[in-house]
Length: 66
Length: 250
Image (tube, one colour):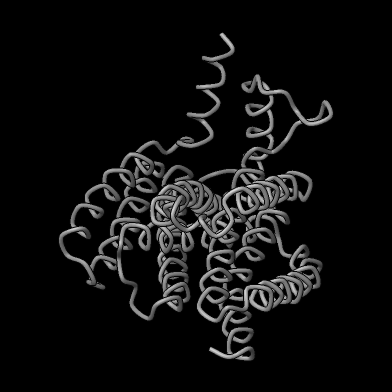
């Protein structure tokens, strides 16, 4: 029971009430990690990461505003 | 590198890292309270001391800084975006002001089965963010000292330069804390969300091997870009909220 409560607390603590942001970021970082491994030294990937963060937050805000 | 060069290079490089630590501690301490923030920072300091004492100069071989940057950066990014999202919703009138703290405290205390410090609740958000920020940046300072010290053969001078940087930047942070605590709560949370998102993006990107335009100065344009996005989002959502409310009244 204590383990379930602890897991529930951790889920709430890390993911919060916007699961789409946490899930989207994990997918984005994994994908960018793979691309960065093949395409070292590019500054473009930084802009891709920022664009993904902005897009995810915008989508999450639009969902909350509905 | 001579003695003066070692000291100057270590001081400046360490000062940049300490500014990042102080910024995060100030942001979290003012908005979430100092007890948990300092508890997290102290725990990181103890961990850093223990790691350095045990591993010594072998530290750089044992700890993968890139992996640590990705993990800490991703978590800071998730935390930062949670805060920023809520601050945007509050600023645009879509969420009531101040209800989150009560909710967080109630849920945090009810859900956790972890023993609490001296019978009182510990703010895990503040403690964790402070711990991670301090641990990651502290490790970077240690690496800077080891690199500069090993290159010049003046480890003691490099360590003293880093300590001087920590004392000077830390004192400036302590002086700044009072004026910052007068800023309205949601504005501060908005700022903290922006800062955590900025640092999280930067560290996660660095850990993944991404090269940032302008190097460490990328923190500034990242902050400006996220601030512009957040302000635009507040404007757009406020307009949308006002329209919906006017339609409901009509």
